[in-house]
Amino acid sequence: MIDDLSLPWTQNYEFMAVIGLEGMRFNSPHGFYPEEGVVGNDFLIDIYISVNTRQAALRDDLADTVNYETVYLMVQAEMRKPAQLIETLADRIVGRISGFYDSLEGVRLIIRKLHPPLSGQVGAAYIEVATGVFQGAPQKLTFR
Image 1 (cartoon, helix red, strand yellow):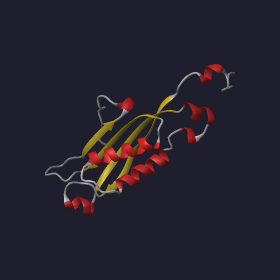
Image 2: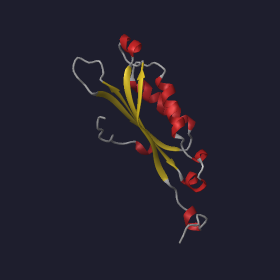
Image 3: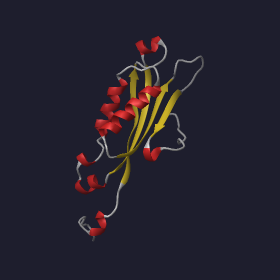
Image 4: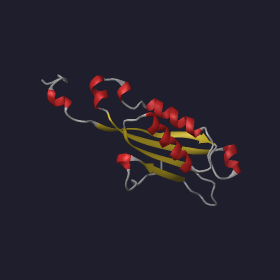
């Protein structure tokens, strides 16, 4: 049985992983129309962060990886600050997380504004942004 993590072959590779939070829900004062700043809108946010988790796995140490509680608190803090555009929110969230964790390989963020105030029924308006390894064609999303 091989269970010794000190074997030489176990040290010679990177362990890229995606750490994510899906379905973060917020009611926040974002939107172009004045009433949106008063009553707020419902938002659903998914975030995916690519990072090398090899050292965290070997040491079993949270300090060597992305703490998703910290990520949630950063997203929550940005959602409390009013903005007219979801593009502004996306930029602030990605910038804050990227600035906090210097070892990230990329961030993918989806912000959905649920039931936006339009003249017809719309499930959600959304923006998807990506940096680093996530850049490229957006993936097809399904509404939750």
